[in-house]
Image (cartoon, rainbow, N blue to C red; front, top):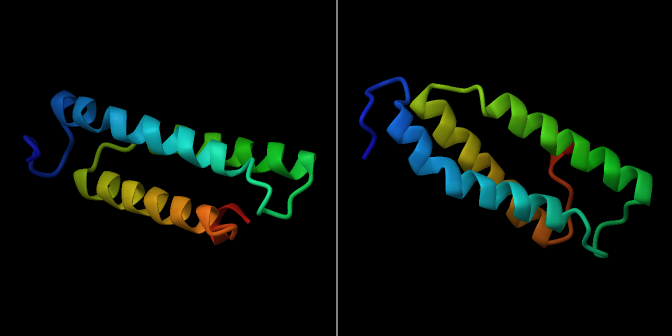
Length: 90
């Protein structure tokens, strides 16, 4: 359970760190899938977009927004595994 009511504490952020890093790595790996119809340049561009999204997300301090970002990352990963490109990185 979160220690902060609205804003994330250092303990909350540390608790989510492993999960977020795992999602980040899995999304980057999924972009290399041969099921996605992307050229090499498109793959590099998509990876750069994912990095930018995670960099912006790392500045988030609201517990609810952090949960929403993690849910969105998990949903995007499920789409990538099906061979689809999520809309927010299209």
